[in-house]
Length: 451
Image (cartoon, rainbow, N blue to C red; front, side, top):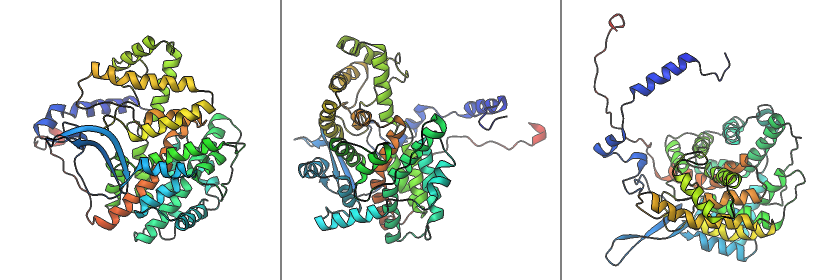
């Protein structure tokens, strides 16, 4: 019997498990349970307080009613649109500045930013033999799994892993922020070599390069990249660094941190959440959906594109999930500011790469999809393109492999997780323990001989 074999007996036990589950959707309404921690209108149940970030998708009208508005995202009270405009207009990278802002609730001065970047650069390495022993000797097929495993393994190299003082947690978080690109890319190279038969190469990061530049440098065999490629990857990292605190992986960070456990365990748990296709894996689905579209229809014919989108919703195309991936968001309705920003810069890169026709296809789908969804589905709010819609296209134009799409999300989001971990440690003081309503009736115990 192989390690992964599902035996007939396991299938039999699984069927018993299915039969024993009598919880049906109506029961959530009966017991007033906010399924998925969301109310009937899709609003998240308030579970805590934060200063790290904020999402705005509604505003009050003259009568005091909530009405949808253009989406806004704030990092420590600063509009992300303004943050991006600031560093782009200066012609400099923004991710390191964003990390500083999220961690310390202020924009750094030039001197503070320089010193902070130098600190991150000094942490941009892994313990001796770590790559050989933890990555190359145990190659895996899923980069998020290897990333999570590697984070847990770093616990053993830390002389003070369980110290939850602010200074020690900050030290650990900064090290992980600096190390994540190395862990992700080296895991990918290991996978390519041992599972795909490709040549193995390991580039050491350069101290003078920022996070985005180093990621491209160590990923590519020739280490080459254009300024626009580095700028757009840096922008994508900024836009993925944090998102409102209520997302699944950030909530996971709060829940696990509240138990008083170590940083490595908390971040590994967050990675496990982000790995899920309902969270961090969505942009891969967008790319696969477009690949399927291009393989099966004439994408220059808008009628065929529209018919394909209808068939997606009718569960007759692609993965038959009934979803148009990249469209809609749990909070935003009229627009996702991250998608708005990425769209603008993605068009520039599409021109550089000779892929403007593909960019126009994305724009066509972005325009058609909300109209078709509104026709086919009962909606409680508007639908617009979310950040996953364009981030996958950006990553593809950058030549990034699908296997690294979600790890790159993690490379960015570790900044937000770190800020929330520190906030939870400093302010909460209680373990997060939700309540569940038991809906199973009491049963008498029957002796084994009488069953």
